[in-house]
Image (cartoon, rainbow, N blue to C red; front, side, top):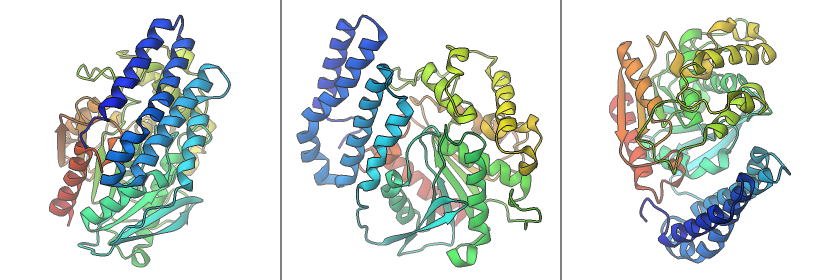
Amino acid sequence: MSEAKPVLYTVVSWFFVIVAILVGKDNRILYFYMGVTFLASLLINSLVYKIFVVRSVGYDYVVYHYICSISHSVGMVLATLRLAPYHRVYRSLTKMFLLVPCAPFRGCDYRTEIVEDVPVRVYSPAELKSDVVLVYFHGGMFCYYNQRMYHNLMYKLAVSCGCKVVLCGQKLAPEFPFPNAAIEAYQIVNWVQSNDVSLGINKKRVVVVGDGSGGALAATVALLHKDNQGKSLLEEHADLQPPLSAQILISPVLQGFSYGENTSINPCTKVSSDKKSRFLSYYLTGDSSLTSILGDQEGCGEYPAFWKALIDDAVQAGTPVSQLRRCRGVWNKYAFPLMCDDPVSLPDTLVIGYIEDDSFDDARYYSEWLQHNQVRVKFVRELSGYHGNLLLHGISASAAKALQIVADYVEETIC
């Protein structure tokens, strides 16, 4: 199938959107009709997807698409009517995907481990080409998604790269705000290196990988690993660990959901400033009250100082600073790695950015900053693709290309 969804889906969707705009007298009515748009177009397109998608890539992609679309629609309607917060509705409904049995794959097995109360899946391809291990952090704006939604992608990644892949679970915001996710991600990497024998991997060849907000976690882990020499943050006398072999960041979010100046962004895929502010507030403080304070921050050059102060407060109210062995003033780089002022000695880096993605500037600026500080970087600038499309790698040409770029990088640079 092509990059776009079926033509019928697009036509029907825009028909309802135009109707919504014509009849909507205020934003509430408009968003309500747009929510109904997705539900209506889903029903009409069921037959189209059944014919074209299921036959070519299997039921997982279809179920994923429908569950996410329905969750988004219901969440938008209930949030507009002020009956329930959008993030809670969306996340609760996407958990339906956990009920879908994992499709059996030939040539790759997986098992589940528990690390610091966080589930971790270890994928092992039948044909191991190297003792490299990829530690993957999934996206979802720090608030959404789960391991089940990334199951197919991890299988494909393990088989393509010929190495083991560790998929990390996450305790999501707003229930677990920053720096919880960063600490857990780092501790999982420490666990991987500490259990190299039982996992059958080489602790000197660990690569952190992530897409979207998962890319931010991967970059944060690389910074924490460099600053702490791989030692556990939760043990007083922890062993040192070898440096990370590389970091791979796919459309990463590195400066607070990209309040940048990317003028090439497709307006149809751009996330609203209000929505970005809400997700940031969830991640940093655990609530959305900062949305009204932020307003429309797009293009505002003062936001780094604002967020720095906010992060300091979040750390003060969250995990004890003593446990992290860090003073409050430097935590901005662990929340937003693009603010890092000392990237020297970071591992080799692959960054993939999509020009029409809202986070393209993050990818470009971070690559340039690392290169300026003598870090070996490969920056891949993709003309097509969109944020989060990796989950549809079976029907997305740009996603399949990104996976191939990752596989080639692992084979040529690390193996």
